[in-house]
Amino acid sequence: LAMASGSIPFPTSDCYNLRYSRLETSENNCGVPLHFFIPPLPHSSSFINRPLSSFCPPKNSMTVQKPFRLAHGTTTLGFIFQGGVIAAADTRASAGGLVACPAVHKITPIHSHLVVTSSGSGADCMLWERILIREIRLYQLRHGHRLSIRATAKLLSSMLHPFKGTEMCVALTLCGWDNGPKLIYVCSDGARLQGDVFSVGSGSPYAYGVLDRELRWSLSKGEAISLAREAVFRATHRDAYSGNNVDLFHITKSLESGNVLFDVVHQSRKSKRGENKS
Image (cartoon, rainbow, N blue to C red):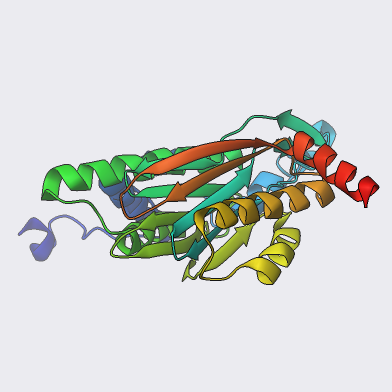
């Protein structure tokens, strides 16, 4: 009544207030302090990349040079065949030309029927995988049944979309079984694609070369595992940002996921011995 009568001014909202209110709504929905992740500016990515000299007077100007460009690189893949879904990835975490860690798990079990392969920034991927795990568990507790894979992909896409245009780099492939095998790709700009085969990362062109030649629906379990192993191995052989081991999951109708770890170095030596004999 006070606002309607004019006793106090009616509240108005500018662009910053509207954006902050949307971030608060997202925080309440997702339980994540989203406004701490990015600066509250219209062009956060350009803000992050600007040198300190642009914020300081000329007499006090200074510039912080990045030691090297932290390029992202990996090889992950997933495909559907008659025996279920195969998800495979290498285990090397790279930061530019530096091998940050040789034993990173890029395939994360999200639920009994779902695993996720991750590409992009390691910290961003791990954070959003944890958020996704929590949201799926909370949904099951609230509603008494698990969230479908397509709904999970839609939920993840809607949570990632507000960060479009920022420096966040997340590319997740959902591999699972939900009334049949499902394979859905979701990236940090909110894009969502469903298909039968996906390969993501700097080594994906080499992996696609193997998959396009050998992949077929009638593969047996052993043939599918060998194909995924071969595709990742060939990618690690040509791509400097991928390497070390091959992490592999097989998701079936029985909701059992088995993890198999293969040594890329051993596979490379075995392949070279075979070429020398021939």
